[in-house]
Image 1 (cartoon, rainbow, N blue to C red):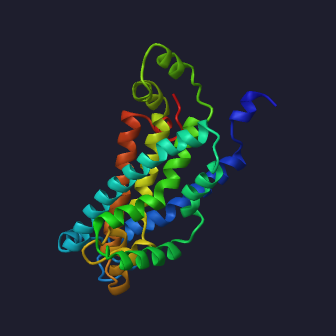
Image 2: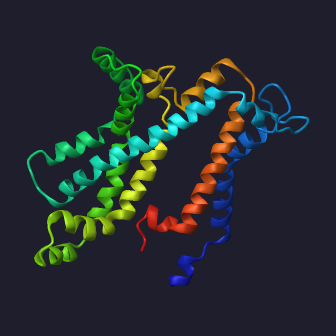
Image 3: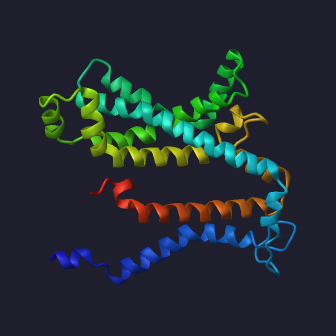
Length: 269
């Protein structure tokens, strides 16, 4: 089979891709349409369109404060997870030592433990330590749960990386710190950046575990939306979700224009 035949999709493949795209995007489109409803409750279809539920967001300061808390929480936890993931990835990929597999399993264990179990465990731990309601404690919890995402992408960037440039820098008198900052870090930066972005997204979107450890003073946006849905049936939650969807699309577009998604997500040069 020629390269041209492999690179081209047939009619069945195009139809399948189109149906899959519609299947994935349909729930998002429905949420965005419901946010324009003129009714007092979640309804689809509806009689008329209105922007009233977007204005209602300004009348819900708890959602605005929860949004900014989620932003700061995601930034802090993703950065902390990256600080842990980079040296761990370098040690695991480049060295053979006793407990290497155990360290890898330990750092990846949050992916294997249900978040409900983690939430109960952290709640009990914070109650004993009297850390309940602390933002720092919430950052630590989220950092622990997002470390695997940062570690896997950073590890993928490190594995198979040639050490010739780093060795040459060391032979010319550069210290380990200088060689890391000037040589190694730029080479693995796409993987590190992609891991940071994925860790931030996971932290921002985390709700199951956060419900157990969050307090009225440390309520994140997903938890605030969950609480609002359980108490009210107005479409404010859909308007907030629509803003998040559009904001994410704008962020990805800007990131693609400035850096390139291929370079950030898969390390393409």
